[in-house]
Image (cartoon, rainbow, N blue to C red):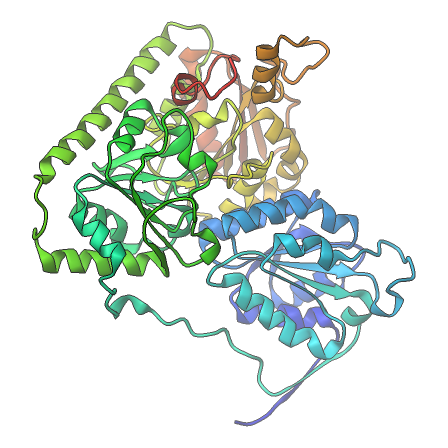
Length: 565
């Protein structure tokens, strides 16, 4: 191989060259004083979405990565810029989002001198990322960047952190030989799946449930999971993070498991004899809430060993869940109906009955909402679904009122981006910007509370021209509904502890590229939503603020008594 020599004027030029080689075209962030990075981005033709808040920059990058399945890049300054972004790093880690964080750092030669914004940043972020490294010499710029890019995309994927100290970033970088290329990914789908204990449990099951986690996002091409569920005759549920990974209009789909499940879905799960968990974590919100988790065999499949829980009995498979379902489907086809002693129609009828009961509950809730004053959230979701276009994505938060969007069938179909079980405030509001950048041809709707909206408000305003096309539906309960519900349960003074002031919309967002309305009238709801969607289709950002009542709570949460009353 012919060896070549490449001279880069500084570290950022070398790093950006590697980003381009790895298919990166967009970055998010709030750089520090080091604007040489922006010059390198401009020279390479990479776009930067400039942010006002480092935490929001991380949320945007995470939303971009989750929607696209590709690497996202977040640019930070040093010291407090890194600590402020830590919440976003936590969310990216829990969501398994491939995000490369490029941060500035105090000069290597001044370490330990108490310099401006000096901090052991690697120690701060190490628990929150898959890999953290501070580049100590210009010779390490290229190898360290290649390592970071490789570890971010995995498997398993997740955030990585690369710090470029001030004196390293300004030094010339000399590279002898060709730049390393991305590693080749081998596809194991043609290889047979071993018929071990996991397949034996699947084959013996009569009342199975397939539970799909967020790791199946971008791994369900051709409906592999749906075909597996059909072949097995299984009820199909997801974790909250798994929404969007499967077709929610499939006749076997029964909604979200655990905390957000409706009563019929809880009853169905409690009567199953097997759970097959695909690429998800069986954390608290999945296995608790209303009905105890069934004492049955659980087959877990995860490419990340840390995602395999030891709290449940049953086979655990370390590997790619797509490969597993394709192999198991083939093995079931080869076996035919051998070994199945109970007619599959019995379980199929119970699945159909559960879906029918959920539909009737939703119809009853909408009928009740029609008799109440003001706009109820069930009505709002029905209009959003009715006016939605394909392809579309609903980006969600996790507050008391906006948890309505987790409820099936109050919201059905389309793509979905939700926060992990960490549920950081403001994730969905900021992540929607990254989602739109990743999928500019998609109709992107952010369904968020007013507390979340306010935390991202500055970035929504400043990036409106950069991301144009996001519809924000803001549920206004005047603050933090979950905390206020607990306050009321304990009889604490609302004036002394004003967690929420119902019906008070936050200040309007101004600008020629922003359409902002407060909605109070049921009669004009559909017209207002359609007008907002038309504005978004022309590249504008629309904000619809909807005052909501404190008692407007998803029935699954209300009936399971998991919300303080």
